[in-house]
Image (cartoon, rainbow, N blue to C red):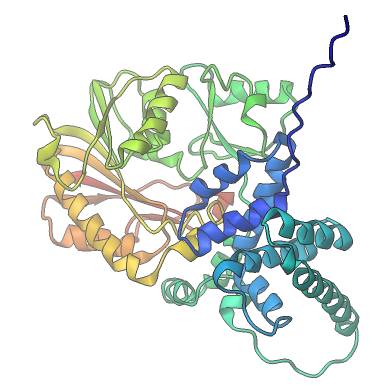
Length: 454
């Protein structure tokens, strides 16, 4: 009796460029966040291709105006309607040719092959023609750059710096001497920062564990002891990650627990807490506080808070609640310390989330400022006399930061601004502490510490 050989389930190869085009289309044309859209497409890719997919998607979104300008000059008319996803496929091809170390012929052939995966082989000739012309144009540009050329027209700032015009204007107004530095920093790939869990190892001891695992360290932030890695690492390779010995958190965000400076038996509130990094950091540093309450208006985002607490072996009272409407959740016990990580534009973390540039609109800023004012006023009423509130945003816009706090102090006689220690920066004559993107290789962040009069 013979038996047939077992059938092997061969999964059909997935075209990574097609997935990247779908992802970018979902972000730019459908207004979905990259944090939501990318994982959906990565689920369809093999483990070894997930990184390539991420690199292409992040790259297209970082250089979107520049790539669109490059491609637009090679086409008779733009792609619209059902063909719109192929516009992003062209950008995927152009990014590879211009910024990745993939050979031009491979970038073109793989991108053109994606037309089949996107179920429209009729677009194959167009994609092939445009991308090959793009390669030739770049080769000609390299040759011409070494020869005397006539002056070219001035390229718009939005294309030069790959940011929307409205945002460039706001940065120029807020930072007339530093605006170019800020925009350039936003285009850089961010470093990976770690936070050692003080309940297991102090930072110095965890650094030794990293050395034993042959994971190189670039720097140590002196105020918080945050650890910057020389290059990003898979979290599964970090010593004791699953056991809660360490977390991934940018060096700027790690300043919050230090500045809030919780004490034994304090009753603490973390407002807008998701995904819970700062909540956990406070608990790691001061396990003897009386209670920690973490709230966020989006219940779905609190899942991450619970996951982080569980992995780190920490406990907090986690509530889905609107910080602007305390009567719906507050039990009446005032807080000694409050961290208000306010909803903001996210303009300080663009290098980590390049989709912010295209999802955020100029009109959003005024609405956010009003919401911040509402939350700040409501949460202030929950703070004990003599208590401390730390206001934080991952924004660089003065409207949301120094101007917001100045307005609050002027309208609340019981609010006093506390000077913040921030290392080598003289902060005594300014309102709060504004970190700009790339400063100390950290994200853009703002902190202001307020003391409530007795």
